Length: 297
Image (tube, rainbow, N blue to C red):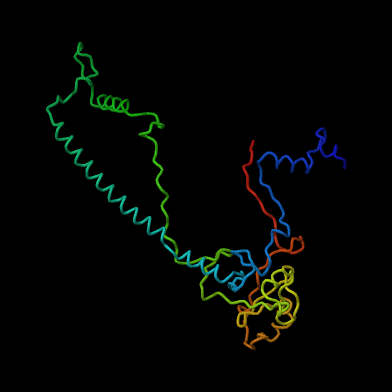
């Protein structure tokens, strides 16, 4: 298709290309973009720092973290400094309010005491009946007239500063003692973290030289290269990382850890959560969406 055909505005059909271009230019409507390979973290990177792990640990749900990062996160969630500060500020504000209420009560009492004078039972400004024909107003008419007089003295405009609502600080709720995993949203505890031991591809390389390579780790049993395209699992007793194919074909036959010889259960085999490969066939949704205002007719 030529350039003139793409920019043609005389066509009877609103093409997909024109719709995408107009949506991006208008600033309205939800946009969805498929993430590429550069937007996907490697399988051996921490879910918090997004960097290769020095001392990796894994949760029972299979999310990999740097040990220092996840422990700092748990300790930070347990602190209640903000809650205690607000409780102290709330106590001081309550004390000030109680003192001001007591002061207002005294002032109201003084005002009532000073206003005690003899007054006629029917005020002259509420006598609605004419004096010429000698008629008097009924109690209902007197009350309606008093209501009208009081309403005329009130301020009807809501934008007047004395009538505008005050913006009060949002009250914080007491933080829960349960710490939630930042990825799965499930409760997490320090004693549930499992130490992960990756098997390097070349044990002679140091850490810096190992991180510069794309293929860094291999399966502890089959020696296959690990990556985002290879489903992996962590064995709880030894912390070794093996491929899911090795689990299905070898380990599940006798349910024994090949490195330590310990008996395994289904909970001891933890599938490792990994990122996608950037290809649609990886089976992982890599679509990012941005919600924007929508124009409605």
